[in-house]
Length: 233
Image (cartoon, rainbow, N blue to C red; front, side, top):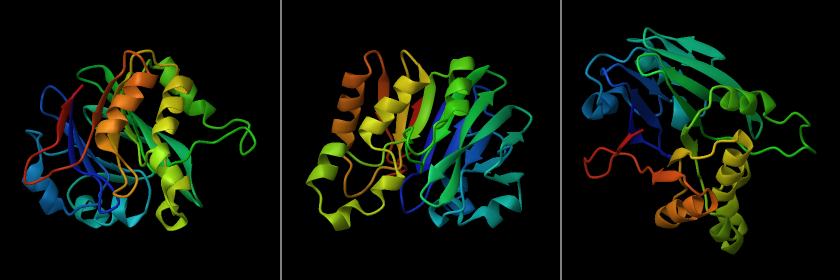
């Protein structure tokens, strides 16, 4: 499976998932379809587009994708010829955001996609995200395309203005905690949606790998200088 990170972050999000036969789906519609067409990697038209939530950096161009392919906003279930997606409701401030467990039917491989959500503790919700963690364990999901919006160390050095919005996103320590709760031994992680203010790409990779022994971490940036940002899992 190939992950093509076309755009990630508060300016827009667009991800292409490609199986080993060239079949693909799109996650998020936060960039124009023309941008997708310019940097696409799949060899056939995408089978569907799934969108986590309605914020503009994730869904601004939903109409452009709806016009040409099946497009789903915050679905609990979405299917195409070669992919299946199960949606799980997550907390993102006052908004509801969905994460997805995506299955490539051709490869019989699973990928978790999650962005723009916050970790819950038992005082907020006794059940937390229990159904999601049960599913991750049941399907033995090893591949994660997951938000790491900010670095906790930089957060504690930041002023109040710089911290705005961080409580609705995942930090590097949140990612570590999430993986431990998912029960995955050797996760393959690609971090997305890094903050321009409070993220540190090189440190993020080293820090998460040091906390999750045996993990492999890649830090995505999206297309830069016309160069694609592609990961193989």
